[in-house]
Amino acid sequence: MQRAVSVVAHLGLQLKALPSALGRPFSCAQDVLRKTPLYDFHLAHGGKMVAFAGWSLPVQYRDSHVDSHLHTRRHCSLFDVSHMLQTKILGCDRVKLMESLVVGDIAELRPNQGTLSLFTNEAGGILDDLIVTSTSEGYLYVVSNAGCWDKDLALMQDKVRELQNMGSDVSLEVVDNALLALQGPTAAQVLQAGVADDLRKLPFMTSAVMEVFGVSGCRVTRCGYTGEDGVEISVPAAAAARLATALLENPEVKLAGLAARDSLRLEAGLCLYGSDIDEHTTPVEGSLSWTLGKRRRAAMDFPGASVIVAQLKGKVQRRRVGLMCEGAPMRVHSPILNTEGTVIGAVTSGCPSPCLKKNVAMGYVPYEYSRPGTPLLVEVRRKQQMAVVSKMPFVTTNYYTLK
Image (cartoon, rainbow, N blue to C red; front, side, top):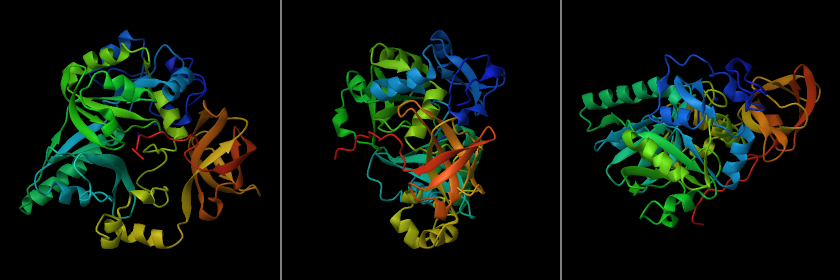
């Protein structure tokens, strides 16, 4: 959802081969940054803190970025994602409100089922990506990006007021919980030791409230941003450090930061808002047509529907694609060229893949160049090198789907 450079020199950190998208929000100015409930916990565990989307967050810990990445793929890692905006939408008209803002079919969600959806504008552009869960407790639980916190909150609050003025029963609450992501093939095994619920009955994109390692009132959602099995745990802020400490007692678990999170999501083909998708990108251009609910497409009752549905029925001018290349890593803004040497697009995210030992990237190219296997060129450090359009995810995802 939310942004390596070979060395982040201005931080004084020797962070080799970090994902390129992470370079922009980094800063050493810590005094005006928001802190998650785990800020002191990160410092105590050797977290190298950086500025990200207005928050102070760990880019890595004592292990290298690549070691953290590979540990997540082989075991499991604990990420602090408390900077994400968590909200509850309450009232009888909660679905009406959410469907007035997003492209997904929220009404069809079963109790405690969630979906990735998109806020869109009237031009069809993506305002943010978010996860909406229809809880059995009678509210929608929404998680959206920290970088869009103010924009998303204003969007939802304005719509709440609009509907309330029309007599609708709807309200919004900001959830001030911490949010921990436990990600990797052994995540469920680790968590099962601390919960009474049978996690085998909690498939991908479902959610339940439970006690976790003695902490009551936690919402556990089987989802994540790495392509691996895992959960995100919304936990009361005062108990976040206690829960993190309990999880770390299992030797399977190590802490991981922003650098590993970015390279993991890129291997999984997942978008970063502000880099791979933005207000000038439609869901069809962003290869996210699958987020459009079938009923919503037919009704054309979401913001930007006239633009988006027309793109579904015809040819879109450009598409988000995966790219692979040898040589120097592709970075954000690296030009993409056809084999004749004409610039046709640009890279939006790129890094060396720790798992594949190749360079992977996403970018936008005209539709006629979007077929997997299409040979292209990328310009890196003013030198052109061969690249090929590749299917995503680059690394097979391992979501727990009960199939």
